[in-house]
Length: 318
Image 1 (tube, rainbow, N blue to C red):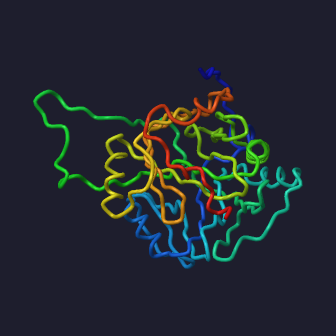
Image 2 (spheres, one colour):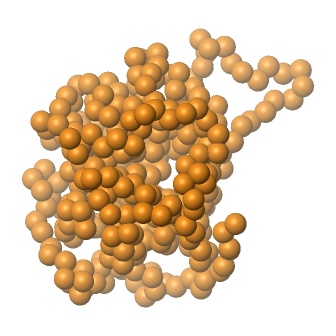
Image 3 (cartoon, rainbow, N blue to C red):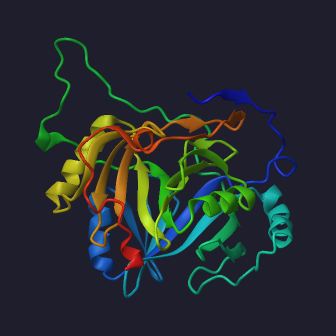
């Protein structure tokens, strides 16, 4: 069991220097129309962008991800949010670490700090409002009293619409180097790991159990994006919603061990996944979380169907 220790909160710009949110991700895909059909079926809003399109969640004016056309599926860059009071501190911090500051890529010009991580992934730090939650997002199952029907008719079921981007899992050549870089350079906290196979990191200004995770592979790449829904029922409804549109390949329903969230993964046309996620653990800013190294059987899932044989396959490495 993870020990819960408190730490003293410090003013922004004075205490812990760390990113507060995943701002957005950018992924190249070989067929934008098919990608758009996938994301609209998933329940995301598609917004035109000069280089392709962006995805948003219902009622939230924020571009969580961008999809651009490329010859193959490829993670283009990751953008992380920082507080305004920390921006100049981050610049000095990056320079002290010997990081080479780069120009932004075409179509994504910004006043952010651009550089590459241990695997060569392009990273942006930019001043944005905090989009990671400031409290535990309650999720579960809403029951009904005796004498009241609980389930709607299938014909009356409402469309599942995720509320936010919850986390991203990417492939890395070296899990320990990923931990060292993202804790030492970006100021994230290690939540849990399983040897040199997988690691989960949180934001130290308060975030879900993980907003970024890494799994070992022969090359970098995107494994999945995870999208929060408020009820377990919506995880299952989302799976049916996607199957009705022809996207039936995936994994779930199940429950993870590390993070504790209920899940269903839907495979996209290029081998990565979009996950419906519900009721993930939360690490408050004032909690000094003690990470643990777990055996493989205690780091994946508590219950659920057997994962597909290629679930951990990195199609960007081929």
